[in-house]
Each structure stands twice: as C-alpha cells, then as structure tokens.
Image (cartoon, rainbow, N blue to C red; front, side):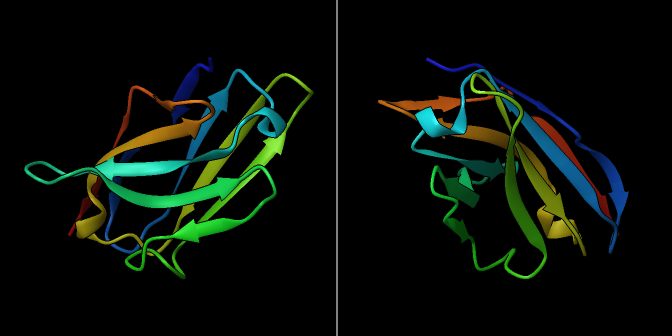
Length: 117
C-alpha cells in the first residue's frame, strides 16, 4: 500500500512553466513504476510520463521535450516524484494524477493545471 499526495498545480499562461510534486509514503525501490496521468473534461485519462525504480522514463509524444519526470528519495521510506512542465500550452489543461504501481495501481487525488491562452 502507498499514499500519494500531489501539489503544485495552478493557473499559468501559455508558454509558462509549472512543477508538480507527488509525495509517496514508500521508497522508490519498493515501487515498480511511478508517474503522472492527466484527464481533461470530456476526455479519457491519458499517460503523461512514468519512471521506473531503475530510472527508466517514458513520455507521451505530446509532452516530449517539454516535460521532465524525476524522483528523489529522501530516506528509505519515502520519495517524491516531480513533473517539470515547460512551454505549457492550453491543450495541457487537465487534472493531473500521480500514479504508482506496486501489486496494483494507486492514484493520488489529482491537482488541476490550467493554461490560459
């Protein structure tokens, strides 16, 4: 089991930047994959970026070159996953959800990102 707490969403102008954070209650070494998904109104939830316990990253084509996922383990029991989002566009507007996979999928409560044109 793992608890995920997101922060860092907000309102930003077209071309701006935001950094999302997800604090996990377990070490990254005990989690298979962590990452971020997003869901815009009327659309399905979609993958944004993931990172494995070995540091292998994967990005949606729509965010490659603009978003960067990283993780920092502060001790053996906790870690934080970041999503640095640069060159934001209105199409990035969505609720962003932190994700972790251990024996099953876990989700955070979501944080809203709004990009104004």
